Length: 212
Image 1 (cartoon, rainbow, N blue to C red):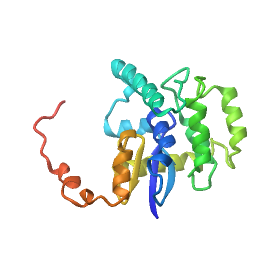
Image 2 (image 1 turned 60 degrees about the horizontal axis):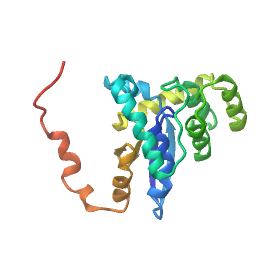
Image 3 (image 1 turned 90 degrees about the horizontal axis):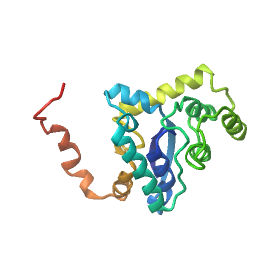
Image 4 (image 1 turned 90 degrees about the vertical axis):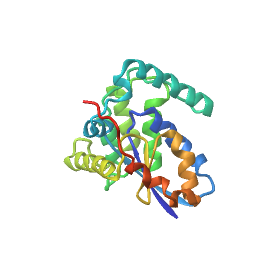
């Protein structure tokens, strides 16, 4: 059985779509998934990137594309009333449901659908209260241990080579984005391409220009 670490942030519609599609994408394979909530904003800050929603035209395209991607896959998705939003309370809630800060699939599914199904405000106070009641975490989201675990998960993602979400890591290889799921399946099935030179050779290609 192969072990996959799925780094996710509930703010990401692509993470939601990849989460929903993963069972079908990997159907018939033997694998286990560890879900690690991370703070996408911290990853962006670490790498000096802007988020898709911080670039006006890219923001519009991203929302159109994810709505289309959901429609094409027959998955429910409605944009939350406000996006982007601060996902910390949702991330900490998910982390608080497990002693090691590793929420199970039910928890992640519940939080993702809280955000991406229905079109409501993701972090509305009354909705957050209802969500917390449903998930019944063993710890408070303000617990210092919960905060530390979320920071640790984010650091783990960066150390693994992740630069965005969704990122799925297996055997030290990181597969990024919704459209990497077919590639991940090929790897798990033992496609010999992954043992060839192309996976690692890209890191040795010199850059001919650097922007300041």
